[in-house]
Image (cartoon, rainbow, N blue to C red):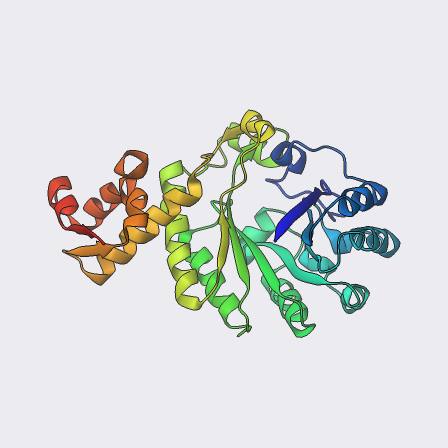
Length: 311
């Protein structure tokens, strides 16, 4: 189903996190009005998924939420709704307001479930309320999406892996869908000041790919679908990134890392059999996956490549 995205840049957000500058990420500085949403929805010829991203939808005033939701209903019959929001604004009242509408998924900006990381990033809550918000969404019958991040201040790879284990304890069926975003240093953020002062060291592209690869493997083992790894590239984002793992193919690099890790675990010295459609995961981007496989196994580059069988 085609998506029809609307970006409510920072609208409703209860505070500004140290890393966030939605206008620079999306290149959109003004949120569309409900009337603009209605017009765009009515122009669709087939059912679509109307999405409200970039802000905290359920933090908006209830009347404004209804205006946006009603506007989205102008899309052809069979269309559905999806939005992102802040865990603080998942209340019983908010969920009751949503109940009559065809909401396909509620995505929560979780970022991390490590209390030190949440405090450093000024998220305004601890892990327990975030998990309670996730459980509340699930108990209300909505599908859940969790937007996770890597490379945040105070965050470690082990703490982000532990985040997935905490989410798994919710025992949700179907399981939450994940998005994994890298922490970038954007102009105009508090994190940019910390970076300039030498108080924050961002990830390199390679480190981010390896970290995301580990998360991807854990997510797959826990049964979590991963919808996206990395931010969508925009001209505005490219201009505003000061530092960090900014790469338009970070998702593919992460999948390369996950494949190398999985192959080395299954057969430390090979041979390794993979689908031909995944050749680029090993050989693309300067043979990133093969180089990582070589590093993990201790084999020479030539030996590592010889032991891969494409089927």
